[in-house]
Image (cartoon, rainbow, N blue to C red; front, side):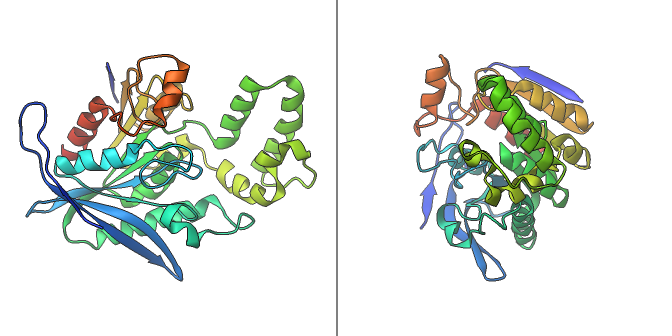
Length: 315
């Protein structure tokens, strides 16, 4: 296992890098995945090449995060920047809106019936779509945040897997840690038994109204399905090259999470990037500066990360 610790619709674009090397022009086109009566929408970013090229499936994080890395409250274009950087270096990518998000909102599944497997099966379907495209030489799955777990479960169908800011513990443990760090013992005593019940696969009928945002009955089936996956177990199943990328200024996921993932699979490389935060951007400042970057669409993603991802895909 190798560890690296370092410091920190149609478009047609052409770029030149800092060394005055002409980079590959690319196009962006909409793409639709049909699953039964549902339609999921994405963007295919293609370098202008006459030969086959690698393609990366980029999977976004939790909540209302769209294909570009944005949500209704924050626009940072982190995943869009990643896709464009890959294209400039001859690597295609497909990023998509998950069910219920962005353009894929009409394909939302009701909260009562939504389970984590809906997301993993959709990712597998996107991979199958890419496999049928003769323009691509290999398929790489890139999962960001919650997309890391989705990606590693779907990743057995790919040639390589990249985790960016992926959790190293199951979601029940993460939620307990977050609650313990921000609340008093009384809240822990109210929430931990609920989490334990859901972890064992049992719903909880009576939930204090103040806890509805986390544990309302309609969301419990999703939590049960999510809690049963341990990222360490899932990444261990992958028999393909793996790159784990983590920033040490991440407010949501820790370096320890990345280390747990890398220790779970002997095929994994680990890259810790100094001053990189959860949305892959370099922040040189305090907690507030970090938070403000989530709304800064002009701040670029880490060049160190981009360079490593490109070399990992091309080797």
